[in-house]
Length: 256
Length: 352
Image (tube, rainbow over all chains, first blue to last red; front, side, top):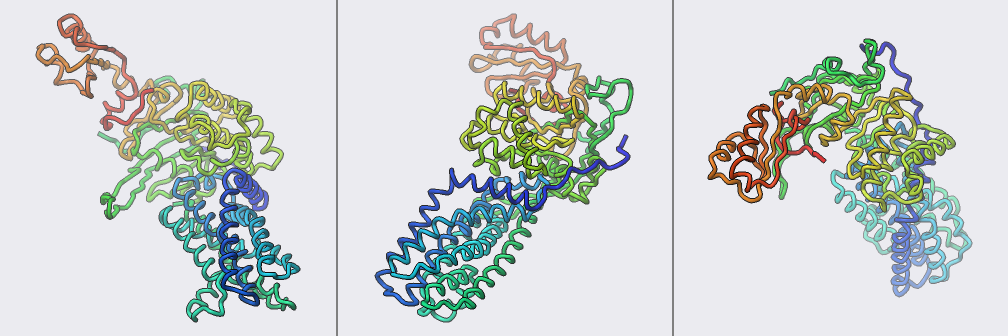
């Protein structure tokens, strides 16, 4: 009664088409779900800069505040919201949908992370321009955001996805995302010169720090591009590692 | 009470409706499940959560599913149906046992399940914020279709299910039944030889239900598609299933055609009495019946032989008890009666 030869398997979805499909589907959610949150993220960063304007006069501290506030938008969306999204998807059984499709785990994680990182672009730009005007910084180096947003976005989105997928409960995923964002806020926005030594170490461990540093350097009259490139390289390396971690976490969460 | 395994060889005796079953040719088996066991470990209690003992969600389940049939898993919530389905779809690795689907060992290669079957789960959260059209198209692309075929299949399936009019609306904004139908559409894009549907028609109106069963029948007739259907709805089970495995407490307690299962309790009928208020127990004919009935509020259900049922009807309708009677029905056995006769727990099956 049994079948003599195994049936032909349907083809797998290939990595890049699947990644593109997940990315486009996630991006379409922006219209309905993400725009209000993006406003919140932007207003939060703008508000922080206005507050810091009373404390900070200019110089390297002003650069750190503007760079930190801009990257904070990325942290809010890519880390916090993505951790919540994956936490919710895992808790509600929504991962079953992807796990029963022949799609590479990396495509789901990278597609979602890429879409969330893309949501942050307008908010980051608005924050950076507003900060430059507020503190009188040159805008000639803003083009570096084209590298900072995707690289810091990858690092933070990977971290956010991993937190969301590894947290044993949905509430813990939300909490971890919020804590990660708070860390990015406190350690990224406040100028490092005034921090005690252990806090500086914690700052060095946070992936977004290198995005902040790279961006802050470009406000200098004569930016040291080698330092900028080195910071971005660290961001990229952390991005690869955190996305790999997220992919592993996805596999683990999808098949129990 | 339970045999633990179900032998799937009885169907032919009871008139198998499986396409291709005629002429005595054996219908090929597409899926063989042998001795599946999955035990959830005991949970320690915490604040507000009581401790739970170890649970055997599937306890030695064996089944054979044949090509082109609609095979049902019927049982109340918590019977182990969903655990069994998760093991069939490669979402969960069993502790013991084997699952062979179309010649592939799914316990050893769970990732192959996604290339052999399409699964409609109970949750739609992955698709909720997409439009109906994008949900279907994206699912098709992730099922390995190229962009053009995904769009073509999306259009065909939405048209087939009558969803074209709401193709541009996000699933989240739809009613429960429409959302379910949209998820069903996504499951159909990118053809698979086996469809695993977990309570597909929950919340659907009759029109949507008909669309689902028409779509399933068309795929069976044209491509020999096999369907595994999880349900706790007795009426649906009786009308659409070719064969059904009755699942209770992690075991298959019976497996046969609906007609074959009902034949097991053919010597019984079901008498339901609904009293206007409290049953008139002071009447001896009513008091005598009480020993054998299952009471739920004002409703009494009596499962007994046809002669005894006739006598009971005569007793309650012919005398003073009739004044206290609101309604009564006498019916041939349903799958629920089979379930109960086989030792299943009461409650939990839906009859609408």
